[in-house]
Image 1 (cartoon, rainbow, N blue to C red):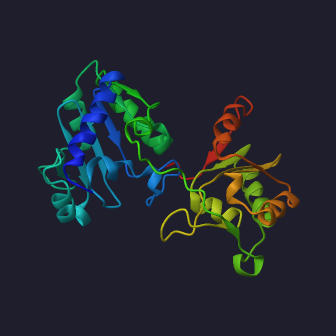
Image 2 (cartoon, rainbow, N blue to C red; image 1 turned 90 degrees about the horizontal axis):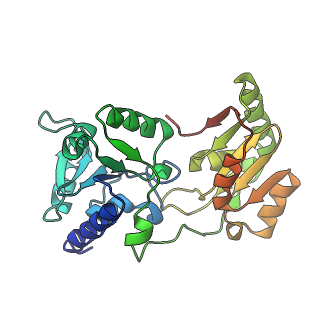
Length: 277
């Protein structure tokens, strides 16, 4: 990556922010599954800032930009952020402002901050919203600017996935789903939305190579007493794998269908969510 590409990317993001009337935009390291190591499609913080560490959050305002990261990455971040237009904020150091405090100071009353709500835990987004609104600042969770400003953005991975036999996995998918439903009943919950990729992998004995050095496949799932649904790009599954799931009563539908499915859950449903802090 050429360092001089970063100012161009910053300018593109700021143009997007101006069009959407945003005073600041926050870019975390995670993906739509709250992964520490996301597929390249979601490596937006790395792309916008040039900082390649696994942990860190970038913030861009109309005039300033910064990356907050921990002590593991101080040296690396200082080198990678040099002359990019991003300042390094060393978390845990006495001189470093807390990120949300800094955003509030830069934005001011009447401002608006943007995030991509898909890459935030609901609890984190709600906590941020509460702090901003206390200072008269709005939070908009509806934007993913990188679908617009990044022409070469990698697609969501479509690598083939596979299943592990019970002898290796240690327990059948049917038995795992049965145990999940037993716990849901104890919790008086109607179902569980499985967001994190490791939880999907465990529940369905499913493995893949969508993330380097992580044996996971990009997918969501919903488990309830009524039905079990795996939301995954059908191209990722061989006929053998797909038929194996269908024989166990597991419905397979498209990856993006998760949003419509959740939107049509019965009103006042009690739903657990994996990965939600």
